[in-house]
Image 1 (cartoon, rainbow, N blue to C red):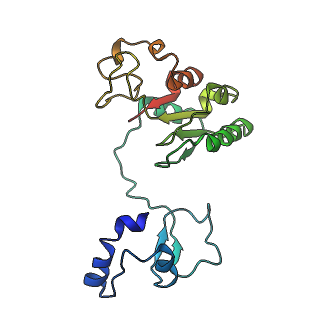
Image 2 (cartoon, rainbow, N blue to C red):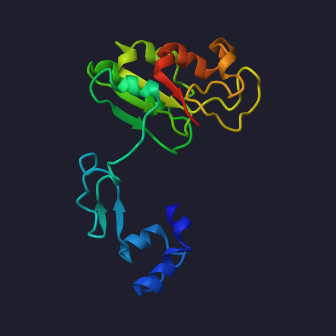
Image 3 (cartoon, one colour):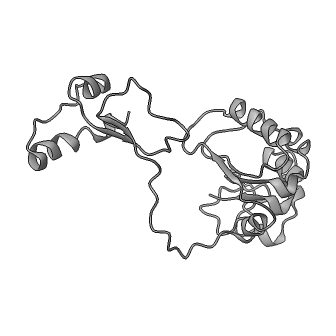
Length: 208
């Protein structure tokens, strides 16, 4: 899929800049690796996934790409408070992977329950968690000191029933027009409400 997205740019770069033969969109990913020897770099840590012995010299695991450490970023107040309450947490997220990821998150939550000192920042990402319920959280000892959850807000504001164009706050259950005047009980019956009740208001951020 990545090759399909880059196939109109890479051949031109090869021909005009590198002065080597262009590669057509009709070439499969397998032929790019095996026949053409196109170099690929995977930006994850070899400590997580060492380079397999059958990978050729054109495939490399480079480690994470980390930009400048000088940053003015300040986390939302709720997240900053969580970070200050204990040891550095692990971050667990699956980014743009779509579909129901409940089968992945359930064993993660079980691991948090079973490892006493483990602290985690969980991010829902693009996937859904249809089978994850409040029950999956409430059995974790010292839950509020150990789990911070970041997820997307509901598509529809539970109070006014409108689809917000944007939300400017991390308490994103409600749209900007309703947030200051709304009790979380307006969201009762939603998946987000159940998770919020389990984790507490200070341990979940709804971020678009």
